[in-house]
Image (cartoon, rainbow, N blue to C red; front, side):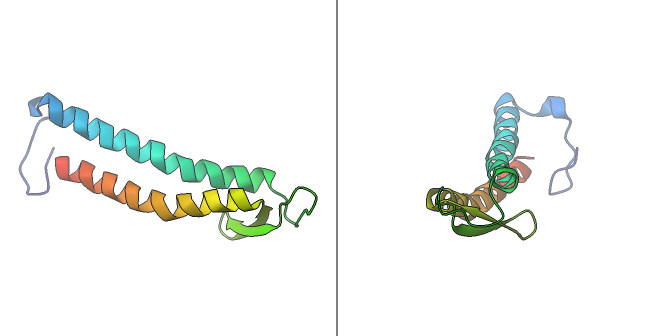
Length: 101
């Protein structure tokens, strides 16, 4: 395996701490990234496509490539929080994993 500087390493030559750290970064990358994917998929499949005042699902959000769905205020805030935080955390974890190699 080549690292960023062109040096070749065998996986068996990596120290245990490096393997654990790399595995942790990759695992967190998928776990944290899945939260946003799961939330958007859940909204896309369960939220109405027209406002429903009785259930307070009146806040429009765009999911799944621009599809408009209506959710409650709390769900909209949760989605906004995930959209604001997940990409930066995922990028840091990805860069961390690449740097470890």
